[in-house]
Image (cartoon, rainbow, N blue to C red):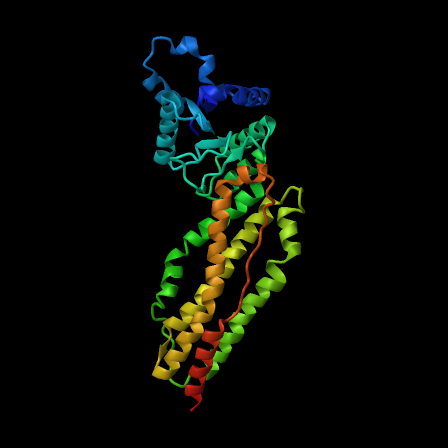
Length: 346
């Protein structure tokens, strides 16, 4: 873990100093090491300020707390912003922590970056959010962190706000990343041959597959992703979760996703002597589309929320863990499937 001289560097317009100083006081009262240029006049005396600020924001501070406002347009604050954003792009990390002083739209920041708002969040709340970011960093746990007993133990030890959600999102994101090729191949309607050959009309096999897919979904709904199992893992609202159960539940999400993928791959990988049987089977394989898309979207949303977890929780958002089990067949697809079965029965 990279060591920094300061936990956070502040960047703001001179006109906004009175707004920023209470945040500085709250940060220091929580033991946060702060770089604030207004307090370092002697240190800056006679130096090349371009190089000075570039070093301060790029190398000396773990985070930059960037206060955006209508005044944040003067030369030095603009340079500070560019130095901070340059490192954020280079490292692809949540290095810049923006705080709105007013509603001025600020260029250069991704629309996906989470903001705090001084019109809503008092200085103490902003300072506490920084403390939570630092706790998450000390755990060295991000959505790209390998899931091992050691990394999970570090996360549980630091317990940054929302650590349960971060752990679950990471397990799911990493698991589905390993299945991306299979997921893409499903929508290409491709699977390597599996050695199974269907010589008849395939109606019996089709019926068996319908039962199997229904059972996969039923077990997930009735046994795995229930309110009770989720509460056992994450705890009731406001309670601490159970790390082992969270990891297990995330793995079951991935396993269910893979089981549905494999169900469809077996259909695509089977060889059919009859073109009519092949066509009906290919329609059946599309029954998995909606469920796979819904679960894939949930995994993407989990990762996006995890990236701005502290900001969302600080803003008062209640983070819900839900697993969409939407086993439904679109009416058009159902009609297409019935027509294919009718052709098989002739």
